[in-house]
Image (cartoon, rainbow, N blue to C red; front, side, top):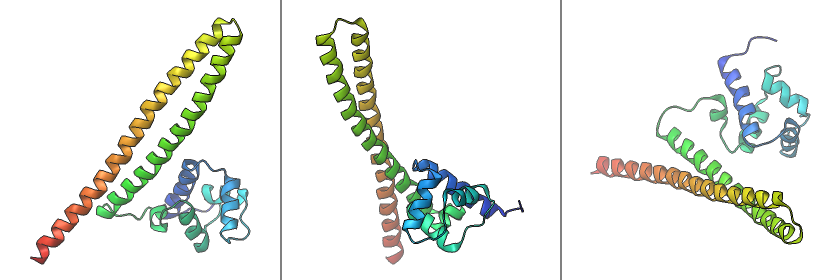
Length: 178
């Protein structure tokens, strides 16, 4: 394998990281790229891009950025440590915290169904294990509630940072115009 530049290495590492962060397999990502009009992309293609065995084409880089809801600059690691980077980081924080919060809502619904099933089993069968399982399920529900509240706080905090940054920028603009 030929030596890749640091930018190429960052790109392939970011692609792998983002794919895993989204919970997609290499085959799923290949199908999504194909759906975006990129021809000849298979799971092996994605694997080679991630390992650095294959260079990425410009249309593939743009499609990957779209799928990951980011920019090609971000995938290349070219974000400057300026205020726009803070906004980008907080928007990503908000997006992922909201996604995690929604997953706790779904898990909570599943836990409620599980409790109903265990309550029914407890009523019909004399088994001490059922009471233990029911307590574990209730414990999980309590943890899910705490997790959901924490994710809500993260989302809210990220939003507060973005709003404060916007207000600070407007204040600077007003000061420079006066």
